Image 1 (cartoon, rainbow, N blue to C red):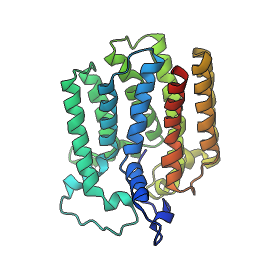
Image 2: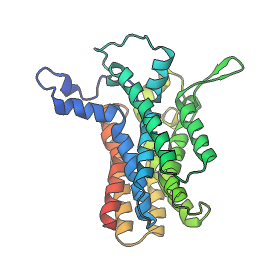
Image 3: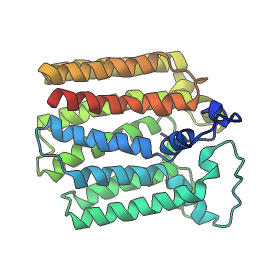
Length: 302
């Protein structure tokens, strides 16, 4: 869920006399990726609740920090490659104006995540974590192969939404089960993974719609570029329908109702999405659909 510069996001906050501490805090939470990292934290907690396990706070914090690092990796890379670059404090993009601070935040996040991993003895297979790290870093950072610069994975046609859904589903659905010592090859584990994958994939398609103009300018083929924005929305709705069917057949009672409502909420976000929507729509509502998902499960299990 890549972040780019924007002139439409939170325009009202830039008008004279309207900008406030609350507005700055809202921008900071959204564009520093703290908000989406909180979504990852809560989805991780949700998995423990769905599996009937005691919540591991260190694991949830580890996921939060790893997500925060991943989403600020582009700022880390930029500042490492050009440490003396000039920052335009009048740039329309909040991310560009605060790039050095985001780079520091990213580095502190990965250092803290590493400390928690070893200090609390999280039971995650090291190589399993490494393969996810390669995907996450390769998504943003181009590789050098035989002196040639290879484009990052997000530039591979049609691939990025699947990478996003896969990494999110593994980290928020399978990591808690791994840490609890449960077998990943059980039917229950893979049904949980499949449900999470479908839900995140449906939301990831919205960010292809959001970035449709940018991706055309960079010659990156995405689903909106291949089948159009309308059909991409239909594809997202179809994935959510499949998610609802799987959820309804694998859960019962209040949990089933909570999952169905979360699917309907995500569908409404899809329905009203378009490439012309301000980026705050996606930051708050598309990402917020994950927050709703976790909140409803918490209420159902309480």
